Length: 616
Image (cartoon, rainbow, N blue to C red; front, side, top):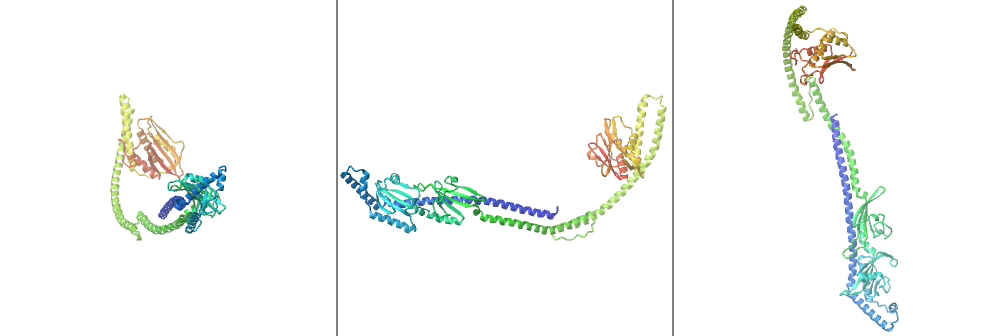
């Protein structure tokens, strides 16, 4: 792989890691933004609901101040006393008339001053808040008779109404919002019990609170939230939409996801098609002694509005990544051009030096680091050149000395071998003559001495022949020969022990060789195998095979094998691990094989000599 590719790939990987990390962080930020937006909306909904409850509680407290007014209490007290007095007079004059008839004939007592005060209160609220706060307000005495009517229409008697009885009994009544045809508005009826300083029941204050007044502050907050692309709903306890920031009318339909609104505060997702909305809600729990309506404030926000800014960041990140990839490629190519050029110069220097061209001109590099390498090459080339010259001279000197020594040893060995060969032949002939005339000798001499002498003569003859074969370099007489025939003739020249079996190839191959010299090779290899097997039973397997380049001959035995540390030395002249060997057998085999242009190699476990013969 080229260094330019590595640099570009490296930069690209860094960019990918940066991009992936950025997207992962972006996704984490998206989730955090969603979570934060939901938590913020929950907080806003809870705050709005709290403010809503607190606002109603404040209105109730304001109206309670009316019940504490001495003018109100005195007026009601007078009305109660007058009512009791008239009731007593009517009972004395006509005891046979039932109570309903008695009440009907009583004159209705209205306190004009109190009525005017109630009207002033209405105007005060209207002037302060610039909208209608109270749609209806009136006061009854303890018998349910209206004694003051600030605004609105009311029956003369209220004691038979459920709200009046609840107010008298519990002190506070808050009704459900309803549409009033008389006022064309939605109102919330509120009843407040009026007590004297001793806590005795005097009467009831009834106010119909305009729902629009209650929602006024919430509408202002909703407009602000609408700018943030949020929709605010108020739904009642059964899921009807009381108010929505999308519309101006009230109580217009049921909220679709009302079933998912469960608990005091919470949130959920609403997915329709490809759009997802985050819905948060808060439930009215009241404020102080105000129990609350049980209504819910809901805030809806589209996921797209939350992620609008970060979506832009994501798109920008994609663009940056694409541009970054292009820049990485351009920068990588720009950088690698100069680096590759310098490396190419260094490679050329190394190539020429490896070929022995120490006079190659080294060009300077633009980069200081590469120039250091080139300077090292310059110094190395000078040093190597001097070292080679020195080694060459030393090798030539050693070679001359070795050749002279080997020449002297070869001449001496050849002379000794020739001198020993003839006397050895005389001894062998004498032994044969003695054996033929040994009828009078003892059996011990015939069975032990003569065979021992013959073995000693054969061993000496074999060692002499090894020396002569090694030192005698004669040209080869190449002819086409049957390899199977050469193997068989080689085996016939060897005395094979009874404990060893030789397996010869089943298929023959024809090779061009000097038959006598190749026989020497097989004789040496087979003798080595016999010596390796020793006295135990064993096999020598000779096989032939072919591939598309060579004819192959293998000689394998079951012997003890060759030690791994001796593998590099076995073809070295005079190296032997045998007490009776000359160390020339395998060296002779290698010389003959190489003289033919063949090759020989050895493998162990089991021992296998492999001869490769190049095909024509």
